[in-house]
Image 1 (cartoon, rainbow, N blue to C red):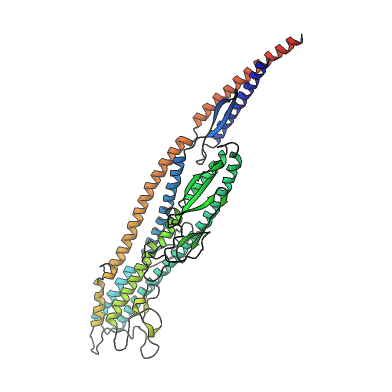
Image 2: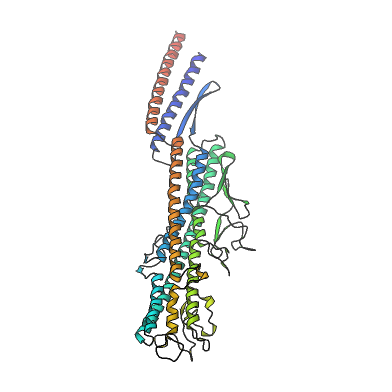
Length: 502
């Protein structure tokens, strides 16, 4: 009698196990298009003589870790590619319009207008000086020189302004990314808490929360690089490193230990346990040694050899490098032209660095402040068509100043890396184009790597409709068989019970 009842209990457990298996297969089919879902399986076993079923997930921790790492690489390359495209547009002939979101930086460099290229403006200026040298007393020719000089100044100002706008957009993007990162850290900590609540009694049972946490980790990797370690009750530690390679705990189980902070002036990320302002010599060891993600790409674009941007800073990232190159170009043009044009006795200059005639310092000329000489407000008038000199002599028809300035079109300088003025602009454009092309190729290669990893993950964790349909049929038939066995057991039990009564 007891054996019969035991068999009924065992068959009942088999019914439940097969029902669970059918439901699990149905859940798998419902998530066939969910790339973040890891398929579930029912494992059957016997514990204490009673059959039982355990739901497990099909996941590969190594593949998931690689996907996170490669996502971080892709995020950095994508951010850099966007910056290179904007710089190429700024330096080129065509400028496109602003966008509403700072996240993409697409078209954020300048307003809706067309502008003449800086190389064309340089050529037009020196060509107008050549034309003036052929007719040095011509007022119309002098007017053309002044017009082209003003256009050249305007081009430098526009380029500098466009770089400022792009830099501001990059800073906004970094701040937006930092906010997103801190939000994801909170979400991951909360998911750790949910996983722990479920797995404190049943390890590995928090399937949906584990999938969601993996999704958030991959999303976080798009913004920054990090390390993870699984600890008690299925929770993870999320770790970053400072510039001394020390581990900094960002998420400790269900608690966010550190959040990110961005210091715009030093172009560095800090952890909230440290001061926002950098201390001591630069670079500061307490800053985040970020090496991947969108944050890395954006920070790199602004980077210099001195994070504080002080005297002697050298452009390393593309945005900082173009700003430095434009300042060098403006300074060299102002210096060479003014050196020829200058009247040592009266300090008459062609270009100036500001409106203070008593403190002219051509070494301070930048693309943002270059201007035509404004005079001293007294005896020396500002530069214009009527005051422009083609010669330092009183001889009518003399043209040595105009001729010498015109011949600067072929002048080369070590400051311009051995290039002429227009050759230097061409090199700048070529460098940006090369970097964009190289980054694009790296992104294409990265896309192949990600595709292969996703395929590997799908082979382990993905859902096959054919397989799940077969499982549903198999477990349904097993359920029906168990139900038939239970029915027979019930009939036997009824027979035994009724027989005993008689």
